Image (cartoon, rainbow, N blue to C red):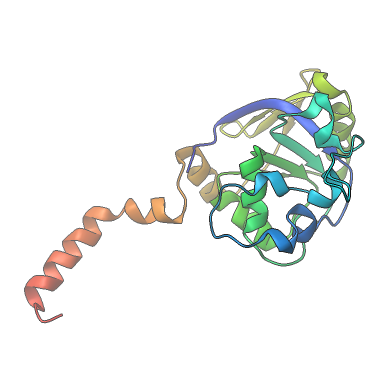
Length: 201
């Protein structure tokens, strides 16, 4: 998993509440267990019309927000079914950080395990960042995980809280497999000991 330390990017505003996982990645695209290739179907219904053409009024289709890696959105983002494809689709598209007042619990935890930083802020601070994000190409925001700070386009600072364990994992690029491999020496020693004492296993 890629490490997350500091990210500077245009922030895309998505002022919607209750964006569920089916809106993030519709169920008909869940035909793979791979983490790649899902970005093209991210927000499919919002991004494309019935003929498959991009909707010009959707934020990620606007030239100023092409390549945005930060998303500012509304309450209860990631609700609905617990599909891990939702953070996979966001990450594959290039989104590394989502800022909202709150998130659905399973989506929140899955996102961290896939190298994304999710930041919970009070509504008034989200509203300020949403206003900043409306500036288009000038809506450059920096999310500094080590300092736990967001720097807005005007240089204003917003502090955010994060679980220390999740912070450690992101800073060091550790998913569940990576955490397990940190104990590789102990695992190998146990296996060798067990083989010597119970060779029939």
